[in-house]
Length: 521
Image: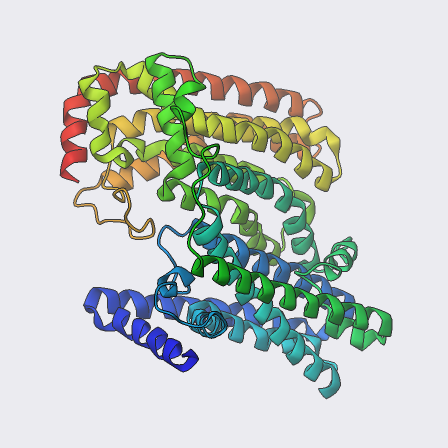
């Protein structure tokens, strides 16, 4: 049975390539991109072999822990059941043990496993301590790879078998937001380790070495230092992690093979959900519908799942030589820019559901305001908590006002522009229940104009805030933080209000055209 499942997995991959020139081209391009990116990262990591053990450990443990975390988070954003979904075998009489082994091995065949193999070569070469440490590094790479693949299996299994209620989806969304904030200091510390003369990262790598994410990765460093106690601890934690993940996977397979329990009436929506929370007004109704979409629609969940990994964008800047002192302030504004960007094509996401707005003669103001509620509820804690964390990592509390001002300006200006763009320049979007990663082609230039207007406009409108903020951070303007804070809040509020008013007018005037557009696309 294990061999049969592996054969089916290989056939499914081959069918993806043989299903047509478009799928074949996409598969080849994806494989080349993964291979080139993995080779580039492996080459950069292998260049650390001339550095000290502490520097190598700081980079590979910090970066590797983020990679393993990605294997645990990304499967939660999938809209379709993964190939390794055990529910597909539940009615075929397959033994649970054979199903668990076969699905696990089959799920390990693909581009993620290819990337791990390529990255492991750079990881092994990075230590450069002779054959003894190299062999230990090979074993550590195997343990870390097994941990990554099992994390992906367990995450996909949880998403398919356990996280099936609305309450679970809401909990997942809250966890993503908190994770986005908590990842900021970890990413900054990894960047500090990558930069020449990076300091302060040893504490983070030592702490991660005690966790399931970094235990296996730190094993060669402790062997090179001759720290027998830490070597034993690393082995215990790494092996226990693999064992517990495998046990969790077996439990998920066993649960999928059992008949589902009777639905818990307390968990099923007995009322109107968010519609019972908001006020009974047109604005409240639109807000409740938007909140429901952001929590349940896979197209929004995929975008939200990207947020925790946006701090990784600072890595190229660190490699280019930008000081870690300034990089600590970059991730939160980037997150706010993305949150302001998300609603810019919200009308197209409605598809045929926009008919409800038109037939009910919903005012443009109610539509525009209601659609912004989810982004505001998510953006507010990221602006406040994220700015506090980023400033703490930066080490100078005098820049808190600058960080708050720039982040608030990007978020509010982006939402104001989204209110106009989503009504004036909608473009073809992924239809409900389709794969969120398959963006349909647009026959016109609306997509390019809309996205350019959003990103460029938000950045341009934030320049008056960013200027005093940068001057204050550089020590050229003593009151720059105060000026940036009030300028950012004022500019953002003005653009938000003006954008909502203009967008409301555009929506009311173009409502029939927008309905025809959504019905057509």
